[in-house]
Image (cartoon, rainbow over all chains, first blue to last red; front, side, top):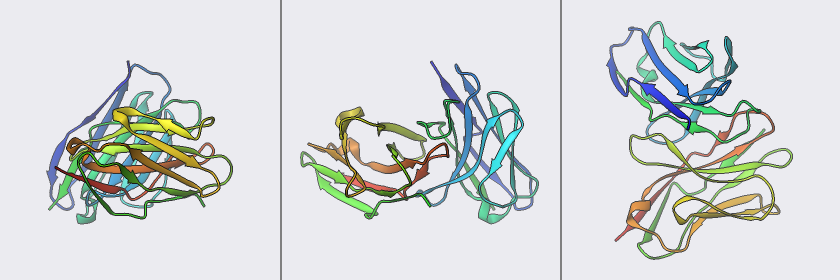
Length: 114
Length: 112
Protein backbone atom coordinates (compact mmCIF):
# COMPACT_ATOMS: atom_id res chain seq x y z
CA UNK A 1 0.00 0.00 0.00
CA UNK A 2 1.05 3.58 -0.52
CA UNK A 3 2.22 5.78 2.31
CA UNK A 4 3.38 9.35 2.54
CA UNK A 5 5.81 10.64 5.14
CA UNK A 6 6.38 14.24 6.00
CA UNK A 7 8.87 15.74 8.46
CA UNK A 8 9.54 17.44 10.70
CA UNK A 9 6.08 17.49 12.24
CA UNK A 10 6.73 20.70 14.14
CA UNK A 11 9.40 23.34 14.03
CA UNK A 12 10.03 26.82 15.36
CA UNK A 13 12.41 28.98 13.40
CA UNK A 14 13.65 32.57 13.76
CA UNK A 15 13.01 35.12 11.06
CA UNK A 16 15.75 35.02 8.45
CA UNK A 17 16.70 31.40 9.05
CA UNK A 18 16.57 28.72 6.34
CA UNK A 19 13.88 26.07 5.99
CA UNK A 20 13.75 22.55 4.68
CA UNK A 21 10.63 20.37 4.82
CA UNK A 22 10.80 16.91 3.33
CA UNK A 23 8.18 14.59 1.95
CA UNK A 24 8.56 11.07 0.64
CA UNK A 25 6.06 8.65 -0.85
CA UNK A 26 6.31 4.87 -0.73
CA UNK A 27 4.52 2.17 -2.65
CA UNK A 28 3.97 3.99 -5.91
CA UNK A 29 6.05 5.26 -8.79
CA UNK A 30 6.00 8.49 -10.78
CA UNK A 31 3.46 10.22 -8.53
CA UNK A 32 2.39 13.82 -8.87
CA UNK A 33 3.56 15.69 -5.77
CA UNK A 34 2.16 18.81 -4.18
CA UNK A 35 2.90 21.31 -1.40
CA UNK A 36 -0.05 23.15 0.16
CA UNK A 37 -0.05 25.71 2.97
CA UNK A 38 -2.92 26.10 5.39
CA UNK A 39 -3.06 29.34 7.37
CA UNK A 40 -5.11 29.81 10.53
CA UNK A 41 -6.65 26.34 10.27
CA UNK A 42 -8.68 27.16 7.20
CA UNK A 43 -8.26 27.15 3.47
CA UNK A 44 -5.56 25.42 1.49
CA UNK A 45 -3.24 27.33 -0.77
CA UNK A 46 -1.41 25.38 -3.44
CA UNK A 47 2.26 26.37 -3.41
CA UNK A 48 4.01 23.96 -5.78
CA UNK A 49 3.37 20.81 -7.72
CA UNK A 50 5.54 18.44 -9.67
CA UNK A 51 4.77 15.86 -12.34
CA UNK A 52 8.30 14.42 -12.49
CA UNK A 53 11.89 14.66 -11.29
CA UNK A 54 13.18 18.18 -11.63
CA UNK A 55 9.81 19.50 -12.88
CA UNK A 56 8.38 22.12 -10.53
CA UNK A 57 5.39 24.38 -11.10
CA UNK A 58 4.94 27.34 -8.80
CA UNK A 59 1.49 28.68 -8.06
CA UNK A 60 2.33 31.56 -5.77
CA UNK A 61 5.39 33.85 -6.02
CA UNK A 62 7.12 34.03 -2.66
CA UNK A 63 10.37 33.30 -0.91
CA UNK A 64 9.75 29.56 -0.90
CA UNK A 65 11.08 27.06 -3.40
CA UNK A 66 10.57 23.37 -4.08
CA UNK A 67 12.72 20.63 -5.47
CA UNK A 68 12.21 17.04 -6.53
CA UNK A 69 15.59 15.34 -6.53
CA UNK A 70 14.14 11.82 -6.70
CA UNK A 71 10.93 10.34 -8.05
CA UNK A 72 9.23 10.05 -4.67
CA UNK A 73 10.88 12.90 -2.78
CA UNK A 74 9.63 16.47 -2.61
CA UNK A 75 11.37 19.20 -0.63
CA UNK A 76 10.13 22.65 0.35
CA UNK A 77 12.83 25.19 1.12
CA UNK A 78 13.48 28.78 1.98
CA UNK A 79 16.74 30.67 2.29
CA UNK A 80 15.32 33.28 4.67
CA UNK A 81 12.05 32.81 6.48
CA UNK A 82 9.53 35.59 7.00
CA UNK A 83 6.95 35.87 9.75
CA UNK A 84 4.26 35.36 7.11
CA UNK A 85 5.67 31.92 6.31
CA UNK A 86 4.18 30.54 9.52
CA UNK A 87 1.52 27.94 8.86
CA UNK A 88 0.66 24.31 8.44
CA UNK A 89 2.35 22.77 5.41
CA UNK A 90 0.85 19.75 3.77
CA UNK A 91 2.45 17.46 1.24
CA UNK A 92 0.24 15.35 -1.00
CA UNK A 93 0.52 12.94 -3.89
CA UNK A 94 -1.75 11.72 -6.64
CA UNK A 95 -1.54 9.08 -9.32
CA UNK A 96 0.62 10.09 -12.21
CA UNK A 97 -2.29 9.83 -14.64
CA UNK A 98 -3.09 13.50 -14.89
CA UNK A 99 -3.29 16.18 -12.24
CA UNK A 100 -6.98 16.11 -11.44
CA UNK A 101 -7.13 12.93 -9.43
CA UNK A 102 -7.66 12.15 -5.78
CA UNK A 103 -5.02 13.52 -3.43
CA UNK A 104 -3.46 11.65 -0.53
CA UNK A 105 -2.08 13.89 2.19
CA UNK A 106 0.72 13.62 4.70
CA UNK A 107 0.22 14.51 8.33
CA UNK A 108 1.56 18.02 7.91
CA UNK A 109 4.40 20.16 9.26
CA UNK A 110 3.56 23.06 11.53
CA UNK A 111 5.99 25.93 11.10
CA UNK A 112 6.16 28.85 13.51
CA UNK A 113 8.42 31.72 12.55
CA UNK A 114 9.33 34.02 15.44
CA UNK B 1 -11.59 30.29 -13.61
CA UNK B 2 -12.43 27.28 -11.49
CA UNK B 3 -13.69 27.86 -7.97
CA UNK B 4 -15.37 26.20 -5.05
CA UNK B 5 -17.58 27.92 -2.50
CA UNK B 6 -18.46 26.66 0.94
CA UNK B 7 -20.93 29.29 2.08
CA UNK B 8 -20.94 28.32 5.76
CA UNK B 9 -17.90 28.83 7.97
CA UNK B 10 -19.53 26.86 10.76
CA UNK B 11 -22.31 24.28 10.98
CA UNK B 12 -23.72 23.20 14.33
CA UNK B 13 -25.90 20.12 14.66
CA UNK B 14 -27.17 18.02 17.52
CA UNK B 15 -25.95 14.45 17.81
CA UNK B 16 -28.33 12.07 16.06
CA UNK B 17 -29.70 14.74 13.73
CA UNK B 18 -29.01 14.79 10.00
CA UNK B 19 -26.23 17.07 8.82
CA UNK B 20 -25.56 18.91 5.57
CA UNK B 21 -22.41 20.77 4.60
CA UNK B 22 -22.88 22.84 1.48
CA UNK B 23 -20.62 23.19 -1.54
CA UNK B 24 -21.08 24.86 -4.89
CA UNK B 25 -18.59 24.95 -7.71
CA UNK B 26 -17.73 26.67 -10.94
CA UNK B 27 -15.66 24.77 -13.49
CA UNK B 28 -15.46 24.37 -17.24
CA UNK B 29 -16.58 21.00 -18.47
CA UNK B 30 -17.49 17.99 -16.38
CA UNK B 31 -16.13 18.27 -12.87
CA UNK B 32 -14.49 15.75 -10.62
CA UNK B 33 -15.69 16.60 -7.09
CA UNK B 34 -14.25 15.58 -3.74
CA UNK B 35 -14.87 15.87 -0.02
CA UNK B 36 -12.11 15.72 2.56
CA UNK B 37 -12.13 15.87 6.35
CA UNK B 38 -9.43 17.29 8.61
CA UNK B 39 -9.08 16.65 12.33
CA UNK B 40 -6.99 19.07 14.44
CA UNK B 41 -3.31 19.14 13.51
CA UNK B 42 -3.72 16.32 11.00
CA UNK B 43 -3.58 15.99 7.26
CA UNK B 44 -6.71 15.81 5.11
CA UNK B 45 -8.48 12.50 4.77
CA UNK B 46 -10.44 11.54 1.69
CA UNK B 47 -14.18 10.97 2.24
CA UNK B 48 -15.71 10.54 -1.19
CA UNK B 49 -15.62 11.62 -4.81
CA UNK B 50 -17.88 12.07 -7.80
CA UNK B 51 -16.51 11.27 -11.22
CA UNK B 52 -19.49 10.16 -13.23
CA UNK B 53 -22.57 8.00 -12.88
CA UNK B 54 -25.05 8.08 -10.00
CA UNK B 55 -25.58 11.52 -8.56
CA UNK B 56 -25.61 10.14 -5.02
CA UNK B 57 -22.15 9.10 -3.91
CA UNK B 58 -21.49 7.11 -0.76
CA UNK B 59 -18.24 7.45 1.12
CA UNK B 60 -16.43 6.74 4.34
CA UNK B 61 -17.90 6.92 7.87
CA UNK B 62 -21.52 6.96 6.62
CA UNK B 63 -21.16 10.17 4.64
CA UNK B 64 -22.73 10.71 1.24
CA UNK B 65 -22.90 13.57 -1.22
CA UNK B 66 -25.33 14.50 -3.94
CA UNK B 67 -24.16 15.91 -7.24
CA UNK B 68 -26.61 18.40 -8.73
CA UNK B 69 -25.49 19.59 -12.13
CA UNK B 70 -28.22 22.19 -12.61
CA UNK B 71 -27.44 23.84 -9.29
CA UNK B 72 -23.68 23.18 -9.57
CA UNK B 73 -23.71 21.81 -6.05
CA UNK B 74 -22.16 18.88 -4.24
CA UNK B 75 -23.50 18.94 -0.69
CA UNK B 76 -22.16 16.54 1.92
CA UNK B 77 -24.74 14.73 4.05
CA UNK B 78 -25.05 12.23 6.83
CA UNK B 79 -28.35 10.89 8.18
CA UNK B 80 -27.31 10.83 11.84
CA UNK B 81 -24.43 12.94 13.15
CA UNK B 82 -21.93 11.73 15.72
CA UNK B 83 -19.86 13.85 18.10
CA UNK B 84 -16.79 12.28 16.48
CA UNK B 85 -17.82 13.85 13.15
CA UNK B 86 -16.79 17.24 14.52
CA UNK B 87 -13.98 18.42 12.24
CA UNK B 88 -13.13 20.72 9.34
CA UNK B 89 -14.60 19.67 6.00
CA UNK B 90 -13.28 20.66 2.60
CA UNK B 91 -14.93 20.45 -0.77
CA UNK B 92 -12.64 20.32 -3.81
CA UNK B 93 -13.07 20.39 -7.56
CA UNK B 94 -10.74 19.08 -10.19
CA UNK B 95 -10.61 21.00 -13.44
CA UNK B 96 -9.26 19.07 -16.38
CA UNK B 97 -5.67 18.06 -15.74
CA UNK B 98 -4.96 20.75 -13.17
CA UNK B 99 -4.48 20.42 -9.41
CA UNK B 100 -7.48 20.29 -7.12
CA UNK B 101 -9.03 23.58 -6.09
CA UNK B 102 -10.25 23.57 -2.48
CA UNK B 103 -12.96 25.53 -0.75
CA UNK B 104 -12.21 27.47 2.42
CA UNK B 105 -13.57 24.74 4.64
CA UNK B 106 -16.58 24.40 6.92
CA UNK B 107 -16.17 23.63 10.58
CA UNK B 108 -18.72 21.09 11.74
CA UNK B 109 -19.58 20.93 15.41
CA UNK B 110 -21.77 18.09 16.62
CA UNK B 111 -23.20 18.73 20.05
CA UNK B 112 -24.05 15.89 22.40
